[in-house]
Figure 1 (cartoon, one colour):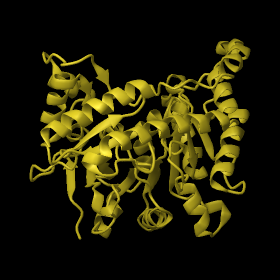
Figure 2: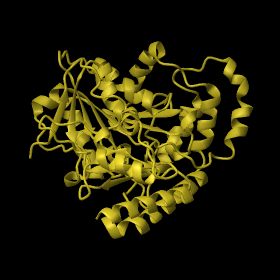
Figure 3: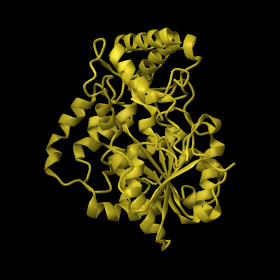
Figure 4: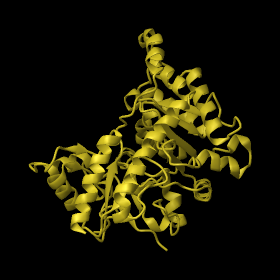
Length: 411
């Protein structure tokens, strides 16, 4: 079966404005029918770890110093140790050149495609960057920055809301320099299994492209920890020096530890790629401040706050089931902190979003704004709304009750 594909021409402007700018335009001039509740942006509102302030203060003097672009040994060791514990990697991640700090994972996602294009040196006039549809808009920005053709694969329920690997021709994959994929997926909250990861790894090595695995929601799950791409690669065996060949995993503390404002993320995996990328970043990227790295190192050494953070989200998903299951069936995804609600029986996502705001004051994000239209006019997000469960439980309960009541009246 050929996957449904959308393309942006090489060198074209970005396909659309920011989804939140589009939402603001949609709701402009519409008076909310009740006290407004925003359930749109995935900005954590749970408490940050209580020990972070002391670590930050203890390292304040290091703001005088220019940080090393490849990070401190303490940061790299803390990250490698965490990856070892989380994914059972048995020390395979190099502490010297297998980990890099990023100014949040967005920086790495944005500039990774340039490094992939240049390091692969395929000599293509029209390189390809593959991404899912719906997608995090930074992926499309990465293709644009790399002057590449962005090819979008519809992520729909039939294949677990992941890019469908069937039907991708060898010729297309030979032109590919970067493949962006998130697991847990955003916005749907589904998880790639080990077979999916290993199949993608095999394609990347056969056709010479890099996988940028966005695992930012890896620690916000219901019961079972999601399999990671590094874990899948280790299970494939082979030469230990090549075990992470063509793989770059990106993660951050924004979701795991509610430290979105710290802007300290990580890239880990292929040491050859990262060793070359750090040279480029030494010319083009800002370093991560040393106090921020110190906080990150301490936070990656603690799991108690992560367990509590996950409990709070799961409590809100239990509330979602109570309010919405009678109308929609099971709504809780495997991971993440979004509801991806199929509202097709009530209409399409854009008018539903506008009317929900006008009648109830609950602000959600239309799924159509997170996806790109296909050439036939279809949009894989048009039947969904994204509802973020970041607000406190009481506020979330109120919003969910309003949504359920509103949908129930229109059923």
